[in-house]
Length: 271
Ligand code: SF4
Ligand SMILES: [Zn+2]
Image (cartoon, rainbow, N blue to C red; front, side, top):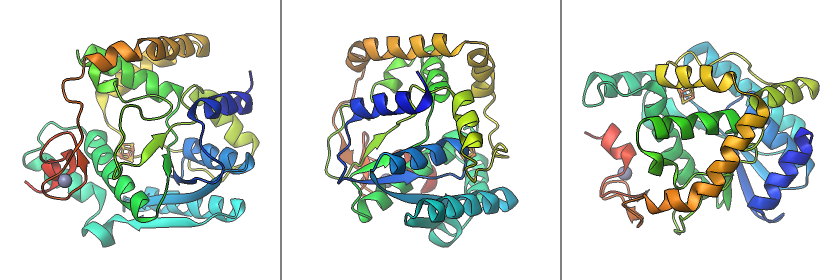
């Protein structure tokens, strides 16, 4: 099955309405660009959202790529400039956390929490119905594997092509239309379509555990990776039962949806 057919099949599972507003989290990289390109091609109502992380030349190139793509697709691009909004670049915020109470936390773990928090809040302000991200089959295999190896498979409980088990007026559903598509195929497709994309890796992606896991998933065939995630789908109900906390509260500091009294973002940033 080719990439477009797999994409359509995943959309069937996600079942977004054609009138729903889907905000695509555009990083400037190949994955999210392909998501935007294909959602637009198949007639969905999309807008782009880019977080400018202020990480020097790399971020400048990513912003340019996102702008170019949105202008080619004829869609609106919302830009969140982290320096303007939060007072510092991601590098600075991250280093400050790691130098204080977040010693030992990985770059991507911190950046990921902050980006998710921003995305949910801004998507809500923009009245979006869904947030689409570029997570692909390789990313999802790695995450699931890492959670199993760490002895915490329940961390994958809400994962899937569409976030599961979370219904809350303040939580915007996240969808991953590339959930079953291998990274290699996405790279090839983005090149074939000549999408304006930054192919270089983020200079801060230094999570050694993920790099090790990636080396393993890179040694697998696409079929093996697909089987891995199909089994994940089959096991997802049982994984859900491993969760200890089911209810979503609101963070006492920022008011955003959270499983604890204080959300992970506020635990990171406000201590
Ligand atoms: S690779 Fe890691 S540090 Fe770089 S933008 Fe992504 S989450 Fe942030
Ligand atoms: Zn909070």
